[in-house]
Length: 164
Image (cartoon, rainbow, N blue to C red; front, side, top):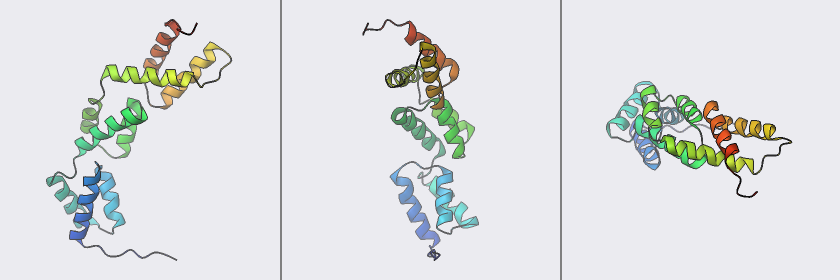
């Protein structure tokens, strides 16, 4: 049985979107999709989005910065993965560049090192080469750049092991 969608007025949709955006930062694409789910289309949809922007409920750069900070700090994603996900949200290149400013090089390298060291404790390998390869693949899959990954793996490998 198909569920019928109830008609939502333009004003009610605006109020709902204000609450939706006030709860957490949203991308324009998320708001657009939510409005379509509410059966709001064309001019009404564009006017609601314009109103949300004018009232500062919706701000692409603010969303991009918050997204980058959160995914880097909480999920320990690399820059490549964050950029990829921001592009999926149809965020502009300008806002993506601004979002990347949220991640300092020192924090980025330290996080990468932490990700690799944590994985090295659980990764099973028959040789040092195989272990390094697995660690690199893991870090690269999390969105870190391969040249930086290999440089950090090399640093870790050269560091004296306190457990020996």
